Length: 458
Image 1 (cartoon, rainbow, N blue to C red):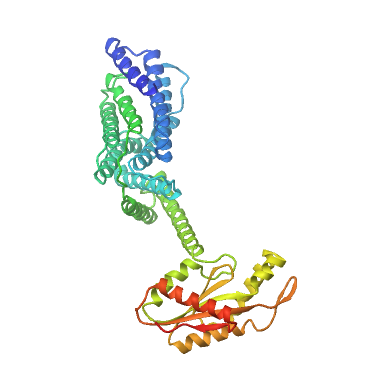
Image 2 (spheres, helix red, strand yellow):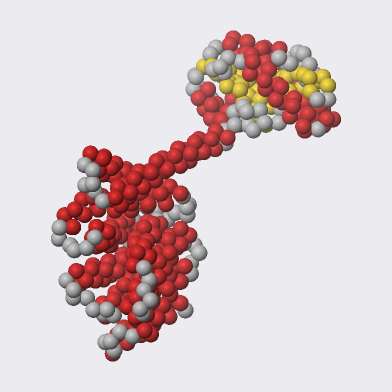
């Protein structure tokens, strides 16, 4: 219903504009800006399957533009004026939010990342500082007004062109869809209207409440409506593009600061501030990227590590088995004797104490190149590279660690260990067969009471 009301209200406003040429409060202050706010509401109420950051960004972009339009129109009718700086801030805020929303709306991804927000801010600030740095001085010779006013006259058209270019470049990277067509059409119509307004204003040919002003509303309506349509199945691989753009923005901003340091008063202060903010955000992005990389590394390590003992877990052990079957080495499977009785009698906490102490003893006698893993419960696995004798020596050393008692919170306890061994000589079997043979040898060692059984070499 909101989408239907949006276009009906827009058509009604166009009819009023054609029928009545003189500006009036109801059509130009109330109805005109109500359409903008309704477009923001339509964007916000788009299907929840959408990327939430895209929906929020585009909603905020349209909402902020509508606030700026309301304030600007208010100043045209009433003597109590709203600060032009406030109006400029709301209009300018449209561009970074719209850019972020476009990138997210056209990408099939759900994750909201702080890095993406920083990338957008860096690109926006960096582009603004470069544009201001390159064009501000020549522009001050041609345009009347303060540096700030000249800067705004440059920023708006460049912002429009960036939005159009960003939308088009992202669309090229994915399958075309109704969403991308509507989004590109809306951005293009908005930009054309904006450029026409700036041209008319520069030549003193603009008339308030002109029929062409509805181009802004039509563009915003199409942008909001695009979120209600399917965005296609292809995920956009824009990460490399974003990274390069961010890097270029950082480099150019650094050059502006360096040149400004060599030639004092060459750039206005706000140009240097924009460049400084760009560099500051780039360093913040670097810190967040390093934190995320460390988190990924830690998560990957935790996924392959036993939490209780700190040893590699079964997943890591199975991966190493794939290497063992192609080389000369020995697989040892260990099972503790008497552990279940202690665990049942004294509880899991005491059992965990015992497992930690056993792990410490095992690690003390194993060479650094030997892999030992906890496979689950009281079962361990060891991979030793080299000939059969090396594997036997390691097995006997591990058995020797359990020949004297363990001191736990409940007193001294005694456990043993049964070990099954199988040696490989080249890629002649599968890791499943290795495990099966070593497991059978381990249970034979436990059943017979010998504590150590070697299966035939494979």
